[in-house]
Image (cartoon, rainbow, N blue to C red; front, side):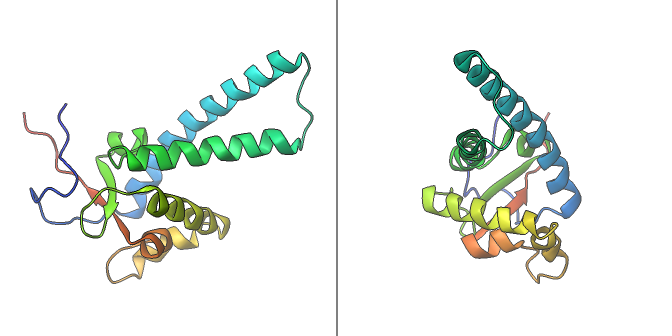
Length: 150
């Protein structure tokens, strides 16, 4: 399955709505949960005992792996696996791919967006350009990709 290069002018910009973004996030959450379970299992096997609840190093490891998951995928092709399934791609407003500072800022503001019970995501309903808080802050947009040709 071919992908459309970032910055290609094959179709006009179509902003992704809340439903499609949430569906992609559910896919990604399932994958990230599996990654976290594998990391935790590896730590338990190395330690030889369960990890106590609230263990700060463990929590920091999970947070760092979550950040690496999203930032890494956004920088490499602009799509997480969930975004790929729902034909979404994140890119800069210019259509260029994300670099590390842009992706990290988008992730950090995305956490704030989630911490406000999704207000930053729902913001796209009133934003004139259909952008979320994290898109506005980082200068990014999430586009809907056309269906692949047969």
